[in-house]
Image 1 (cartoon, rainbow over the protein chains, first blue to last red):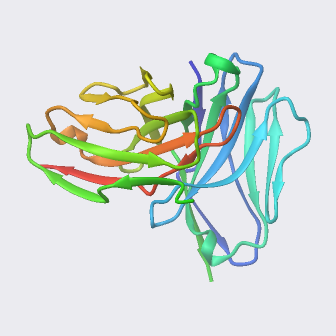
Image 2: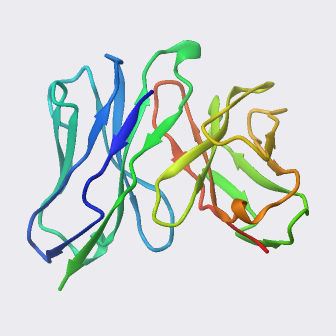
Length: 119
Length: 111
């Protein structure tokens, strides 16, 4: 069974600075997806970034980038130029890739990291 | 294009009552899922569906039933509500090989 671990329950960062959120996972699968979701106080789950395990290049989305280390099973999220609107809970998630009946859309979530951006 | 919609937004139930949480998507996605989120925790999968007429259990299925008669709708039924089912419930949908899109959530309080 797959597991996802986020070891930082809470973090804070000053506005305009950079912060990195950690995530490790355990799986015996070779093909999979990894995600970071943001959950602001509104509770809406918002996709931040997605990484396919077969891609060596780290995914980036504007101020958000990941450091994907497949051998170490590590998937950290870096937020550059932090903004007050980045204050939220961030979840790391894993999904097995199988295609056809093997790809069920089953996401495995970590426990989350609460990020506070301070002015 | 409304995406994934959920009703109601908030519901209070008494122990033993039954109810149905509604979920609909207008993106013609094959996969739909229900998750629950308890305080301070990540989401956990309750049930999922890979297409109309096909459903299966997730990590925490006890006390819940689902059906998928159409591509668009995936209701979640609580058979006999218990205080342990107090949670926030999220519905999600995705296309094969794609990314899951979540609804806004339903907050359920069971007294």
